[in-house]
Length: 455
Image (cartoon, rainbow, N blue to C red; front, side, top):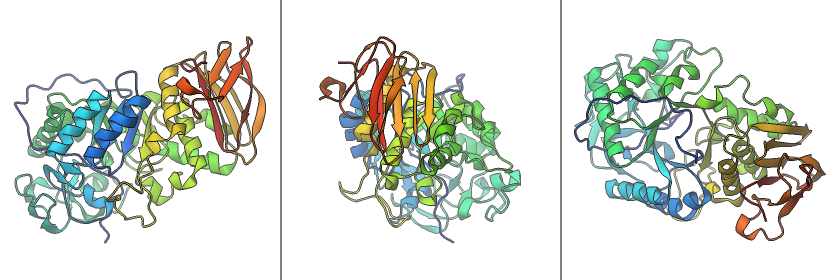
């Protein structure tokens, strides 16, 4: 059986200082602070993440960067080797502990907080020598876990309608940790506290669906200061485990969102996006995304290969008030198992594209302004964030020209997906005293205006 993960994993560390009594921790409705957009830099080396924070993420206004697992893992060139940990040392292909600490410091200096992807459901399958030199075998990971630390069900998950099967058996043959064990919970909490001591601000909990919410809560309760959490829980109709079980822990990745966007933008009718929140998690609990490393490979969402449509979907996500958006930035691939590029070429750098960075600034500028003035027709739509911003998107093959209701004060505004507000270079739209503006939206293009970008 192939050992590719359906979900992803962790960042790493060994240190743990004195862990005091667990403090009270609120369920965060979004990454705390005014800048709530996350960029996931998938499989990007830590040194390069630090550079991205300084050169693009910070200046664009991202609040968070999510980094791929830092822990020692199995050897191999495939992307999924990073998601099979063999110890909690920082000794993977993305960099060592010094590189990790330097990255966190550089990002903080740029005003960007760090979310670490954390694998706490399982350890690696098979046996061998890890990327940091640890010799391991399945159920025996020296210095971390032994046989008694794993669930007794030593076979693959076979029935997603059976809660116990999903949460105690093995995900694609990976050794499933007994997270009901106090020893295991303490080891995980120590590991995560160590990352917090290195400056990490929060965690994405990989494969949370495969641990009971009570077990995850118990781990979090053992931590000195758990920070911001988001749980990966893939929704499945009729399945025993559902995403809303985990909302008491923090945000939850809303996988139905990306599927909805793909259906709308590829289907030629975007009118249904007005009610995109229907049937999904409450907005305050949902982390939204157009795609991630799993969905771009399984075909359930749009991907960078969809070109302008993909950027349109990201623009919609960043403009619409539902959820807390996460921009995915990975690398080009033809082999779905292929690992990251070894040099500077091949990265999509989606986080730094003007069409995306302009919309990050848009979201920061409009804040919690309500959605208003919705219009849609066929492949085009527009809406306002009342008094603060306006966006029009056109997924069609011909331009859309009309007079739009913007809700904005009269003035001349920069189209932020085309130009930096400091040098708009003719990319402007004029709003009249009646709040209306005549604008042309290019084929597969966007017009986005906000009160922080006037000329």
